[in-house]
Image 1 (cartoon, rainbow, N blue to C red):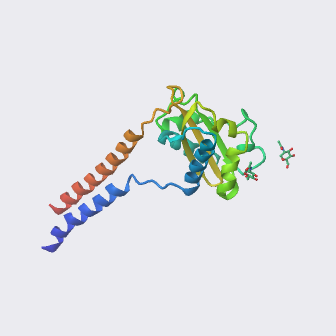
Image 2 (cartoon, helix red, strand yellow):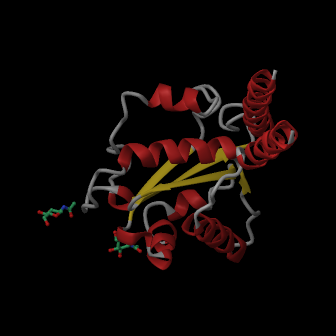
Image 3 (cartoon, rainbow, N blue to C red):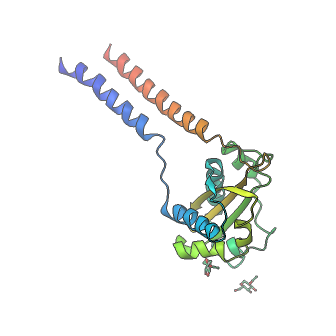
Length: 197
Ligand SMILES: *[C@@H]1O[C@H](CO)[C@@H](O)[C@H](O)[C@H]1NC(C)=O
Ligand SMILES: *[C@@H]1O[C@H](CO)[C@@H](O)[C@H](O)[C@H]1NC(C)=O
């Protein structure tokens, strides 16, 4: 009987496919460009490179998600007067989604910008030649996360202190994702095997 022999192999293949593909994340070019651009800007002022912080990335994406349906105006994004940014009532929820809390993000900095089409050069200058430029070169920041949705791009800066380190759980997060992938495939295998009985 060829079919039962073929099935476990097929299921195994399917499982490996799921297992391998589950944790893959797409990194959009505009985020990478901005990351490089910000670090070049800092390097030009003899400042250390900001390291990637995955939890900050997560929060930046969540915030971009909140902004995404707002049009760009002269009062949004980099044109915002500091302190007048829209406050999201669900901010604590966004933090929780990213395994963060108020206590380890308080000293961080969230900087949204709206640039139609996220044109790379305009995106970069919206950070390096705006009210944000001084923040970007503040020595207290050591890490960065970037998220984008539609015309919005959000930079989140982190510190190396407990009040702003965004306590990176990134490896745990990755573990969890692959574990979910693994459980998913195991269930598949189990169901497959039961069907074969
Ligand atoms: C924003 O634009 C509106 C209309 O174009 C104008 O009336 C307003 O003064 C501008 N605000 C700022 C802060 O530039
Ligand atoms: C920021 O982006 C806007 C587009 O939303 C652009 O018109 C403006 O020139 C940019 N500002 C800077 C300083 O690059």
